[in-house]
Amino acid sequence: LSGPPLIARALRAPRTDQLSHRRVATMKIAVSLLLALGSVADGVAVQRATTVANPIRKVVTLLQNMQKQVTEEGKREQELYDKFMCYCSTSGGDLDKSIA
Image 1 (cartoon, one colour):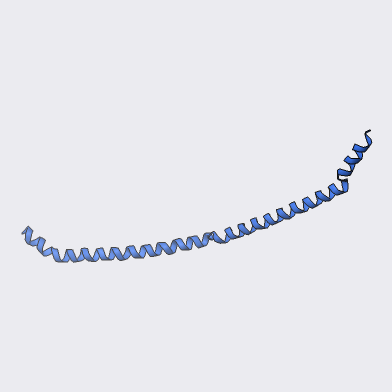
Image 2 (cartoon, helix red, strand yellow):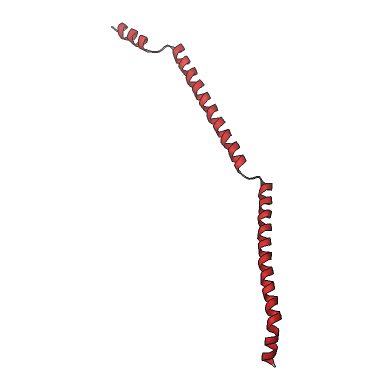
């Protein structure tokens, strides 16, 4: 009585060599996916490294920007000094007259 159901179950059940073949195929797929993801991650890391500025480049850029700023401030200060000197030279006589 138990014979035919066992035979039917044995026919439906995969054999161990089929299972090991499936496991090997699954592992190959998993390894290839991991390698692909690893290479993508490496590419992203390389791209980040190239887009992030070199520390020396940052310092040089900072100094260049400071040079521009100091030059502009120097021009403004020179203009203010010239205006002040003009005021001092022209208004001195008016001040002397108002005091005397």
